[in-house]
Amino acid sequence: MIKTYKANTNVSINVVLPSKKNLHISFTPLSNGSSTFTTDNEEIMNAIERHYNFGKLFRLHSTQDESTKAVELPGNKEEHTDKTVPGIVDDNDENTGKGENDNKTNEGAENKPTLKKVAVSDLADAKDYLADTFGISRTALRSMKSIIEQAAAHGIEFEGLS
Image (tube, rainbow, N blue to C red; front, side):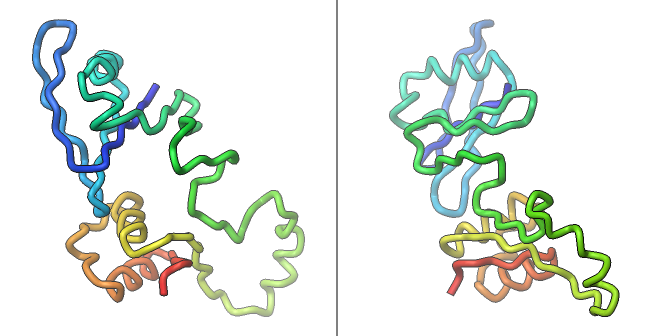
């Protein structure tokens, strides 16, 4: 089981493990000022959930089982009922039936690379998506121009940026 914890600020905490040892945990900062910490270690999960600021300073954001299906917890702002990744619009969905005539339509057409459309609300979301998905340094994503260029280089088109 994998659990992700989220804080509204950049957080570092100390927890006590069952072996009575202290463990320093630094949450990973995001560009919007919040931070997250993800672990699959059962001892660390229990220690974090026993922390005196659990539920106040930080909270459990999501849980994933071994089947890698993310489960959003109720009460979070981002609730999703389907299995798709939030914010991604896939034009090539296999269940739409569009794949039947692909050979006929592509014979005379140029081979243009199709861009994957990703819905974002602002530049910070676009920067987080590129940094988390492709491992691009956040310092390389300082301007809207550089974000759009990096997205195009990786076959991504952001919807929602003005």
